[in-house]
Figure 1 (cartoon, helix red, strand yellow):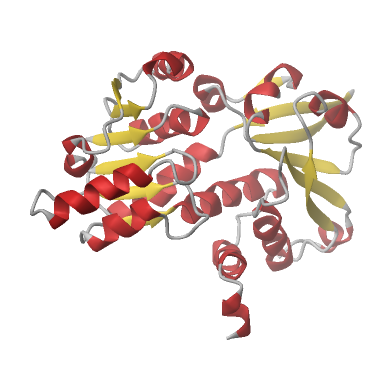
Figure 2 (cartoon, helix red, strand yellow):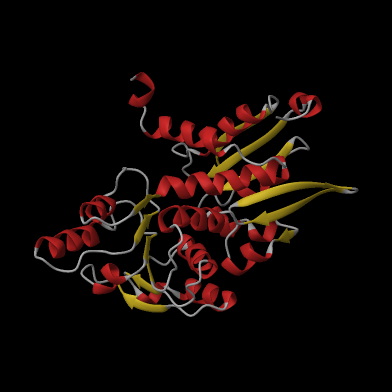
Length: 297
């Protein structure tokens, strides 16, 4: 629990994005503040466009402890920062801004907790199993964080399957900065690589991975190879996704995208408040938010 001084102190934090009303970050952070006894802390969701970001950040006063950022603000914020932590720098994406007081005002520090969230979520599914091979679906900012997470888990040469090779430039540059060597290929929903990998991470937007789900189900139904690795689909709405359902039906391990969301938010809470995040309380609040009827049962 926080000290009496901390409980009396009014501090602010928020998630920014456009749109952002759907974000579950306020649920997670607010649950953490309650469990920690940080009564004066408030966390909100604020709709901020790329064009509005600089003026919004400039207008924040000394009560602000930090910001969570959604796409596309994870790149737009970079020129506004005084310091970018090494991991966020190599990934090329900042999802956390910390306001650190200095003698002359404050320093804005950019961090990336998505990698932490991915590693922690995947470890839940992997247990002690090593990661010899991995497949990443998609080539956006989350895919860059995924490459860093897989490298931390021991896989530095995953296969990245994308819908268009012409849109992989940013991810290839991020991979070069990380010192990893992924292989890029056009996404074939029926690719045998998906079933053979120790880990599959889908960073595709909602419904975009449905053709892969259909291919997995068709292959298993026809007596083909079933998936053998751990699947993490970063999409958690709808839950479960079609890909998660097909994977689970085939008897393989699924880690829901909400687990990544939980763990990255827990790391943000630690960075912003200085307290170890109350993971159990945050997980309970998240589950209630994702399944509202659970609260009434």
